[in-house]
Image (cartoon, rainbow, N blue to C red; front, side, top):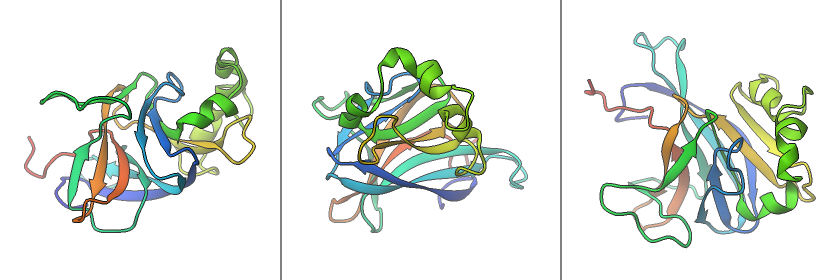
Length: 205
């Protein structure tokens, strides 16, 4: 990726189902179903995580997730801007809407599917996230056999049509991370990213 001081590698995380067109970005272990929602055309979309090598020697020994991205269209991106959530007014100058993270994890899901496809919230901690089995969300995120360590593509427990959540560790950890759109020269929205604020310009201090 040009314009940054770090080398990058992009990993495919599979397909995200967004039949409602209401794409939610959240910390899935804290506020799944209550995250920031942006409107996109209903459909199924590839998701990718961009991992930056932040080590001084660039030898792949210090890796951090820089972006979690839903790819809507092929094309050449010429403009990026922070997105305004569905139903909200644009943020005041100097401010932005973002994803509050308190578990070191971010994720994308169909906002409408969460209410249908997740069991009662009281069961999530030990009945979904940390069951002690290979199917638990924590286990899948740590499994190199599932995708890449730190990421997971998980069908929600009560899904009937493959409704899923795609998760990734959040770079440096907790914080407030903007949701950014990439646009081509005609104004088409090509992708939606959770910007984990890892990248810096080559001349950054």
